[in-house]
Length: 193
Image (cartoon, rainbow, N blue to C red; front, side, top):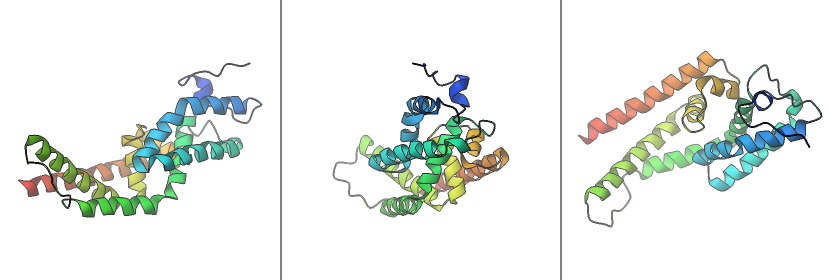
């Protein structure tokens, strides 16, 4: 039995999935990246849906293994690209949920006395509503890059590989998304003061 190298080693960074050991290499990729993919997806979707999308990601990777070109990017970026494309099928639900969360901002009934902990929780809920509303208002392309970097912990270059865009475009989209989010949070903070 062949031992599959751990993540960080060249065989899993840019594997040759067209060879006879493709199943073994893909199993190694699953071991190395399934948890991270699930974390990324479950931050954007319900955990059960994230489970399904991780499975679909690896089914799509298996089906498209002959199309994977190690020269274009790492296997990690390729897998996140597949996952992000699958996630786009659920984009309308995601945006609807974020908009509902933003609308619910401030509507929650406070059932305990307003002490420091409760005030902090209310502040956090207000910020969450602001962030959710801002994320919902971002262009899909900007939101995808931002969340790949923030939640999946990909570098902007890896996010570019995952989305099939030039690194400069990914950095520009990331900058725009961060700027809009930062400006919105600063505006909300000023309004509260």
